[in-house]
Image (tube, rainbow, N blue to C red; front, side, top):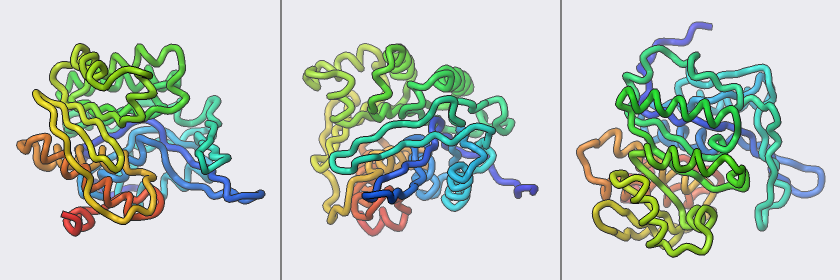
Length: 303
C-alpha cells in the first residue's frame, strides 16, 4: 500500500513503544499501548504538531495494535518500524502499589534502525525527544546516542526526560545519562526522578550538579499536585491547574508534550509560557482516566 505524501515531522520522539499487560485480577489481563517515548509522541501529535515516534515494534498482535494506535493519533507511520522480533512487554502484575517487570530479551525495540528513516527528516525536525528505559537497553541505547549526535549536528534540539525506572540501575546507564544531560536543550525531571537518580541529595545540590554538566538548558522539575519549578537564570515555581483528578497516568508525558508543542509552535515565547502549556496538558491528562492525550481544545477549555 502506498501512503499519501505528508510533510516530515517537526518533533521526533525516539525510544520504546511497548504493550502494558495489566492484571485485572485472577486470570484476566488488559493490554494497553504505551512506552515513554511513544506516549510523548502521541501527545504531541494530539496537540496538533506534526510528530513521529521513531522506534521498532514486532510483527505480532501487540505491534499491530501499536501501529494502528499510532495512525489513530496522527503519528507519521514512516518512523515506526515493524521487525521480526516480539514487541516489548511491561507486565504490571500488581496495581496498588504498582509492580511490574519487562519482558524484552531480544525484543523488537532493540532492532530499531535510524538509517531506515525517511530522507531529509533531520532537516525538517525541530526537536528530538529522548528518555525512558530505551537509554538503558543495549544496543538501542548506543543507537539513540548516535541518533542524538546526528540530530545535534543538523541543528535539531534535544529534549531529555529520563523517566526513572528500575531498568536504569544498569551499570552503564550513568554514562548515558550524563551524555544526554550534557547535550540536552531541555531537561525535565520529576521529584521522583531526582530521588531515584540522586538519593538523599538536596534539590539545590542536584540542580548545581546539572548546571555543572549543562549550563544553558532550561530545567523543569515537576512535583505532582504541587506544580513545577522552572530553573533558567533564576527559579520560578508554577502551580498546577485545578481539576478533579481521575488518575495521574500519563501526566508527565503530557507535560513533556505540552512543553515541546509550545516550544515548536511558538519558538519566540519564553519557557514560562511553555511550562504553563505543559502544566495545562498534565492537568487535562489527570482529569481523564488512563493515559489520556489532550487536544488543543482541552487546553483552551482549561485556560
